[in-house]
Length: 166
Length: 384
Image 1 (spheres, each protein chain N blue to C red):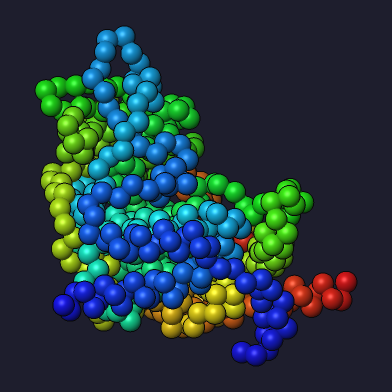
Image 2 (cartoon, rainbow over the protein chains, first blue to last red):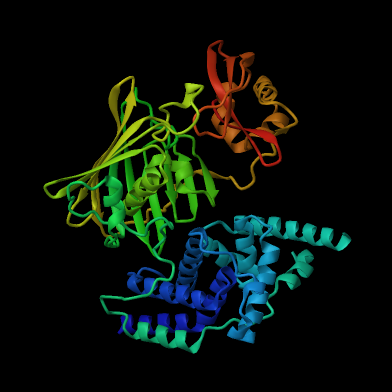
């Protein structure tokens, strides 16, 4: 009975976080279909695992971590950067074009940063994750997460100021 | 932190990305069928955490007249997903040295390796007694228990820390790496044989790097002329044994042997960090000594040992490392001489020979290793 309740809770956690997970993957991959494929695969991987020893309150971050690492694999496997907006076939749909333009805009800002700083900024500002959650996903200390955030944001602020002045 | 209000506004998404109905239905079906044994899925990326060169390899029965390249490249079959591997590897090295280091004159040191390959995360732990390292798939922690000092490295490839041992972390990686070398023609020769129920892959490789100065020759597997032999179970395609030998002065000396591999279920938390260790964050490396040649930088650092001048040493080493690892030995020493800088092997370091008279009057000769930071400053990376 306990197992059944646990499974129900896990199912609810997954369903409640599906939008966040797809958004999380989308802003790293720049393609909605691939983001959904990746999230689906992450959930299947999670379901195959023996997760009885994971606390319910950690399930959400555990799945985020899987998605995060699959995104890293995808980017490292030389697949592609974001599809530039000018190569996008507008016939696919206005909404998708606007989504991609938005992702393109955000990634253009973050591309100037080292990956580990951009990663933390994405998670905090775009994905809305707290430093506690970020430290759980990336397996780093909170102070490291905050330090990377500050370092990256300082760089962005300097870039922004320089742009304004030029 | 709200100094960043403007930047946050700039970065804030203006679109609302949501999961499609189709995805929701698929996920609900998967949740309902959680107990099923076989999951068929479409993997859009062509492999699970594998490089673009080859997703997986399969060895076939060896027909006569086929080259090793043709055989290796001919067929593809997914290896069974292996979650947990426990490996015992003996390597000629010193227990306290870094994981890349080998020495053909040293005895074998036992390395206990634990691997958990799951969820596209490769977690591992390597314990050689006086040096231990572990990774959760993204961050690497390595520490020396005797010094209670460790390092935290993030965004660093396993290969940079482990050298050749990184290829042992998954059997898939071994085959893939050897195929990659084969197809990229790095001068290695390959041979495949079948003996009973075992397939034997032999790779004979030349040393990688520039050895005009032979300082680093044979100090790592990649920087040696070596023969790598792998024994693979023909039925399960799992790695059974492996040895690596170095060819030195026409002698073949075994420097690495896998004496045991066990495939099984995950048993304990292999990413557990040791207590009581001070882990230094390597994100913030020192600024370095700027505007100097390598020899001048070496001179400055080694002279700073006399009074343990932290205003100099903090620029080239992290304080925790210099205080814990070097201060006791080098504080109060006197620089006797330095030599001309040189490079060797594949290392990014520049080496400067030096002689120090230590506080107790003994003489210490070595080659200090320096690297240039992105901003052109010299930092110390070894050789003390």
